Length: 148
Image (cartoon, rainbow, N blue to C red; front, side):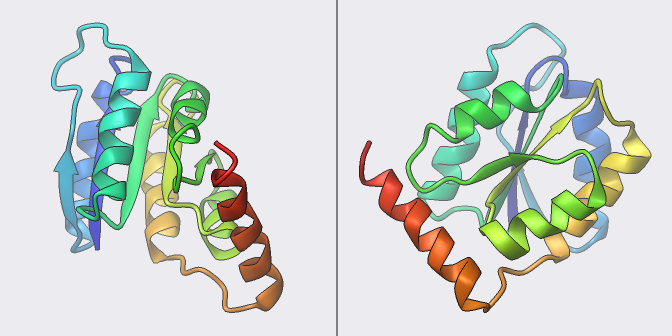
């Protein structure tokens, strides 16, 4: 799977660990910044991640910031993106299985490297359910994108 990852300065230290783990799982990774611990605005990084997905150059994305919340808000502003903050393994896989999430957001100030790797593994292994209830709900989300 092709994964795009981005972080702000708060997520920068954890991002390297996550990238190594994604590669160890056999996935391709594109890092769209930030590339150092200097302050950067998370909406800019979210735009880099989401535009890569929308362009078809990545299958899923990851955003790492302080709490994951700001990154999630920014990513969800983009039509076609369904982003979720995930700080537990159940949410990491269920967000994909039930809601077809294509961007997972992690808070580097909330979780450590060990849990972040578990979250990423659960997220990347998950597949969108074929259950019609979940498919119908995600279609309704896509229709809401048209209201933008």
